[in-house]
Image (cartoon, rainbow, N blue to C red; front, top):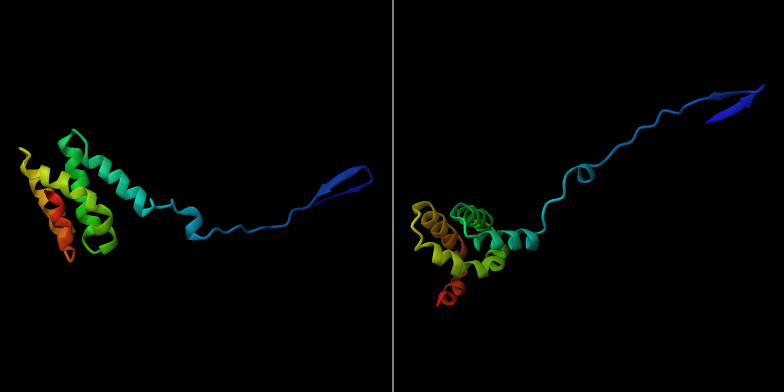
Length: 113
């Protein structure tokens, strides 16, 4: 605040503390549907490494989450196709992701046809 006394201006300051909660300064995580969509797009890539990365992400997300297993039901066919890839790493990643998708949800596998 300032005040004027005999033609001069005197400024005084009041100490202020500004605090932010952790939620305000942490970057926002992707929403589940956004994460699923990005991973599914990556799974359609022409690059083997991108598909392996996507399969690994599917495996990670579906390891303990029934909700993610449902969201990734569209990944079954591309993952099965990866089993026929020349890359051993692609086959392993696809198989691991498929195994996690199959846990407690046997209804996914009839969609392979």
